[in-house]
Length: 453
Image 1 (cartoon, rainbow, N blue to C red):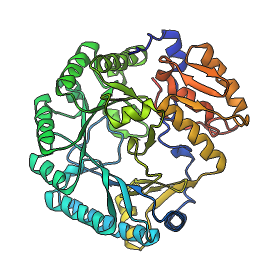
Image 2: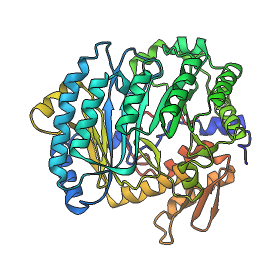
Image 3: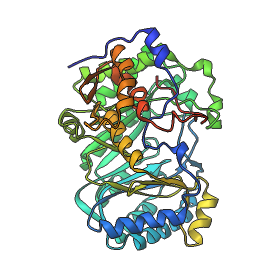
């Protein structure tokens, strides 16, 4: 077992910059409105024509929440009226019809993910309706990963039993922090005991994987309060853990303005919270996965990373064989045949497009050969902390720029192979940005990203 060396304050100061998380490359600010419904339809037709037997990943965005958490970075619709979801489901089904018509014979699903929002905002009748719509149109592969994000506060054991009966096998629970003062500050009240009870119920029903999402850098988090949260999390012992850095972007997410910047741990104190979680989880037997995930050693993600075979899509780290990902619902992002397409953010615009018989694509991009090559390098770094740049000198300039990171002890260069050190894993986003051709374009305004620390 290795541990991160303690980074110096000077190193943190130099590398605490604004940088992408590289969920995609090219990143979302590069996507354009001229890639619209017709362009997306063309990529789906190509996907069905060229690879009719290939499995794909299906994502459904369910945006409804009862309340707005002030830390939230997702696109949500706040309401307590569950009937509001009926009209949304009507349009989801029409969108699925549009997609299935373009895909032709391509029907196999290797991964299904319901995200939000709060998917368990849906009533049992609505859950069954959506599941039937998916399985009427597509074929779920044996052994497919079928996952849903849930809020333990609003999820009932009856809903869990229904989800398990339908075929869901993985749960991702938003936890964030168990400390009452922190929860009050972010408007997310959730008792640890209620969460533990729901995990026990899920395991009793046969769910094979439970993930917790935690966030560090929230208002009023301290080493002591965070330590109590980590201790309670380890008592529950989920199969996987994600520990995300709080992205404080009040200019982009106005509801975050309710959080005073002075309440937030920043710089070294914030990084200390992540290191505290990292050491706690490794000490409890978890393996570090990617830049901010952890899994038990026999988990498929852990095994894949040890083989340097871990992948990543918009649903997170994955080992599924699906190359393409098709998303439904507002803000849903599809990744098909190397092109990215994102649906409209507003319900009104999405409804209008679907009602008119066209996709709700708001923006996207058809990637170039250079984009795809750079994406492969960035993905390897973000997932496996290692990459072989190849012997054709394509990335000769980038390799030379990496020497500065090597000098700071963040990586080791061995010929064309680059491997991050334990210290370098803290700054993997900085290293990956070396290969981002868009960030270095002259005369281009740098878009706003979250801080790397």
